[in-house]
Length: 212
Figure (cartoon, rainbow, N blue to C red):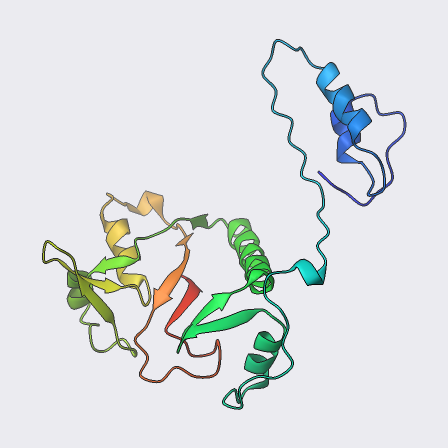
């Protein structure tokens, strides 16, 4: 673990001393001390994640000066110019390493707040049985166009555009009583919407990460 604090003097346990290792200090002596301090007959995996400095010149996804005149929104232009995203096809974007770092940080903040509130993270399949959407009568009234596919067995699915149907379906698979309430479940998953006209960069897209 890397913390930008001075090495604590007088701490005998090399594990604790490693956790307080400063940025400019040599890790090898303490690493050897850690190994020697433990019984060699035990299988010990010693993993230390060191801070990695990467130059902008080494970063995959370069900045660009000029962008398409079709990009009307400043947010769209700046994300492309800064090397955060690139368009694949209309409404679908590559998140480059910088863009992924931003997205991961946002997800982490939300997860921490949800976990603090007692919520539990899970994941649903991306392919939703079409009959669930027909049951809720939302195949054509959800506010966006569903993308549907059929597998080789002839079963029809909707590519998840939102997840209320799936969340309800998984809950009713259990014999939930009032004693189990309340509970809070959530997920992060890719969503697919057959938007007639994708626009505005990441504001109106056909594929994106969404929290349910």
